[in-house]
Length: 76
Image 1 (cartoon, rainbow, N blue to C red):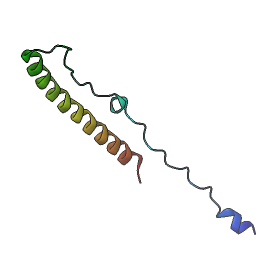
Image 2: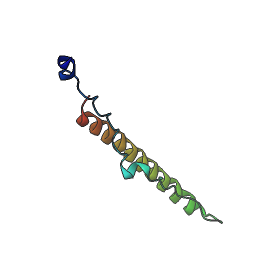
Image 3: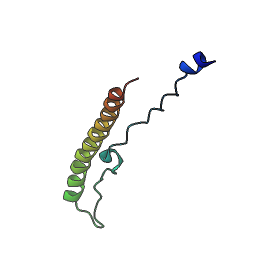
Image 4: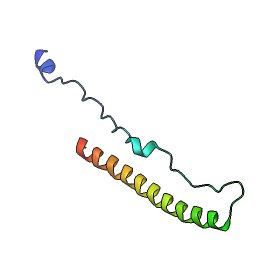
């Protein structure tokens, strides 16, 4: 009977998922037009929105890469 007890080992602790990086949880800002927009306001918002979309996409990609790297570091 004591031989069976000697081979008993506790179950391994469950692997916890890595925490979500804070920058992945922030909403992306999007430029809006003023109440009475001019043509210049429209052009400015168009360019600003394009930049904001690129920045948002890059931040989200970085968040995914960070989570994947953290998962790889924690092991299988």
